[in-house]
Length: 431
Image (tube, rainbow, N blue to C red; front, side):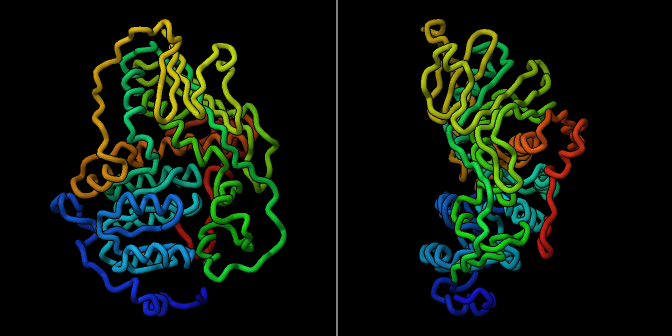
């Protein structure tokens, strides 16, 4: 299919899979003024990969618009939702006036402009992690969600599982005392490097200019799609951007973290102008929060782990989190956790569960859209989490410890960090 065909022609030729609109409420009217049993009219931006999973998670609602830059993936998704209008360009999708809410499952560099476009129209947003590609974008999107009174949720699905809830209960009730250090590690590595110089033709089913979106102009190369864009600064941010919102979510929740005081990359591969780093060790220092002690959080990727594994013979849990307290330690991954040393905690009775079981990560958001109830990973919480994650890469790229003023979003000692806190958009794309 020609990439130059108009939306009208596209919809006409795919009429069997785009047969009409379901007219819904005015998108500027709060949905919680309506019955919670009434279905939402949803637009889905990105229909493959995480997009396919998110589409499944919201498929009980009215799917009235599907958007993707890949004709093949869009056609495949359209088979399940024959009443949905189909789009290549999310900006055109927002001309459809019956949308109540959208999911955003694009590469990182499109998260902020797509989410912001929805929020400014009063549409609720579920966005994949990290919330944005830059620190500045995260703050702006979080503020917009509050300004326009929209229900939001970040795609950190593990947050809805019971294991994280039990860990938060143990930490907040003082099972291991005052927590002064946390270690977070993952084996994965999305290291980058040089972008290939050859220029193969763009496949006919890919709308490359729309995939680039706000990112700098660059020729197509198959090294970017479908997932290896994560290796390059213009689109992703390596392992930190990919995994830290999942793994750091647990200490952020349990310890009520928000803005770090400082960020420093202690180890990592040499900084490359195009490609993300490998084997990063990033240390964050967080201030006292009420009665909670200051805490140091250290991130490890590319297979690096804290020395506690050899010094204290920790149990193997794969990727995970270690809380170090004044009365013991707690190690956890997505599904299991242990108090350490195990002999000290033999016979320990955990507190009765007091954090309610989630109705499901997607269902939380859908219910919030309809009733105004809060979500657990709304953009106020997850925006601050994403900022911290992204600041790890800023510290890596500037090569020095950053003293951070979170309220003003300024690196007090490091003006060179400013170039990595925000980015310019290509003409035609806005935040």
